[in-house]
Image (cartoon, rainbow, N blue to C red; front, side):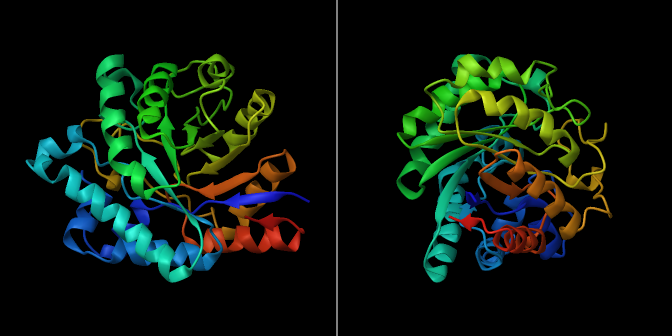
Length: 297
């Protein structure tokens, strides 16, 4: 039996749902600004469900997002608020680690918009330095291209904390990144520079192909999938909201746990959930892991 790190599930969609308000292009940042405490409550629910990691609500807290809405002066304060919400939930729970989320620059799933290398490195380094004192490690999320991986890893090193890299793969071919580049080509980029490799924010069906490749990298590996029907063309336009995406009604906690247990059977030791997964999904994964004799760490 294995020791499994159980990440939390999705933040953004669940926070918007809990807010009771229509989504905005600022996504979960709007919820944190308008209704303080909802983020902390979700972190607490994930800990109660069995997660051992709280991922900070900093995925979209980049200058390029905030400047569009004339709130870039709140960059540091919003990041600090996200850290405080996660830390408060962990303190109440009495255990767990905090992962500092470093989300994509400019847009998710849009590798063609990724900024030049030096600009991207500087952006990630600024955020990593800001978050480092309050996190246990960084998780670079939804990495859609090799260029994205190179720059984010280099920038995150400024925080002097362990780095986990999570790549988003093609929903129909999990052996390729969203850019079309081969997952296998990550090998020289991550060698000696990251502490774990994951696939995230892709269809659960695509994860096995990515995990098969990860097994050859010599690192702890895992997956946390989304529950979207598809990444729509509307969502790939500028300044989208999550209203352009639809959840898969069949992706119940039981079905999601079926996928997760297959990943564990493949050797994955890091499991969680991404967009459209909830505390109920994580609770079911935790139950299944325990029933199978695995240790959640």
